[in-house]
Image: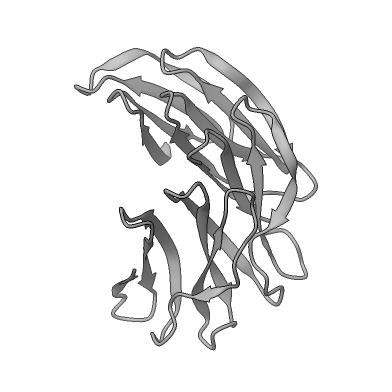
Length: 232
């Protein structure tokens, strides 16, 4: 079966799709007119997360995880592999790997350690533009109680990024949506209770930047009748 599709578009109009078949992640590049560029290719094993992003050069960054390790692959716009399976994390099983590329060409990857019996936390890690690791993993959430999971990032025009995630029990609901704003150096703000004032069980956040430097967040209230909510 084919599952977990993600797509990233490059500035020149080409785009890359990634997905999984069983435990194998695949990729395919496309032209701006949606014609296939080259053959479908294998990226590597992936079980607990897959994502792709593009940078200003048109290169494509892919993150995936398998058997308790997080992997990074990078491809040029022409399809050349620039980084081959860099292990960026292996201390605890990273789940739901995500990636976004910052204004200066660096990338930030994220995940949560879902196998932690004491409660999961969300993490981030900076990656240099050349695909090497920059520094150590850092906590996305400040509140450590219960489960903090399913982080998602987006780059901001000022060079930083915003992270959103699901937090269990912190706001009084089953799950609530929280966020933090990070500057280009990786220094984060305090936590923002994004789903504040909305009763229910809030999950599956999505975040996108706004032209004015702000951002908008959408998510699903899993409590019937399961409305989709948004806050900017």
